[in-house]
Image 1 (cartoon, one colour):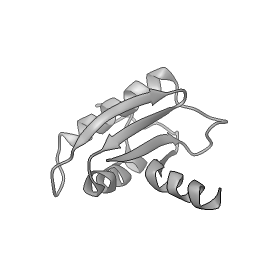
Image 2: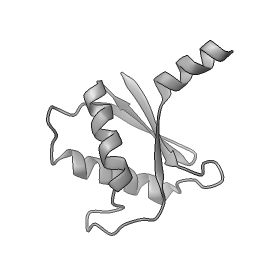
Image 3: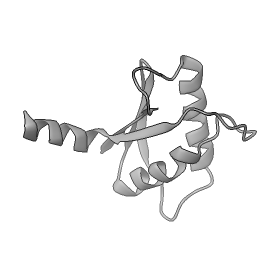
Image 4: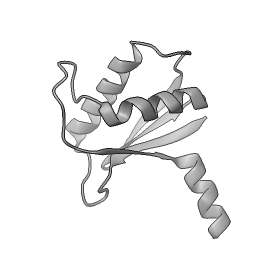
Length: 101
């Protein structure tokens, strides 16, 4: 399982409000219904203050998420939000922190 954080590029100065967290989750699931070159498998989504953590079952799902997040829409009618979104692979980040610590 790969845990991926979805957050604004200027986090923590800027954060996702509870409404934006819900909109982001809904937009991800809406796009997931369209499919991908292989099955998309999520094992959960967690809301944290200002960010969303998605648990992806495999690297293909992480790849898909990285592809759709920069172009995400806030809702199903395709109205764009201006919040630049960043993905952080938390598994890789934690390994890097362990190496430097």
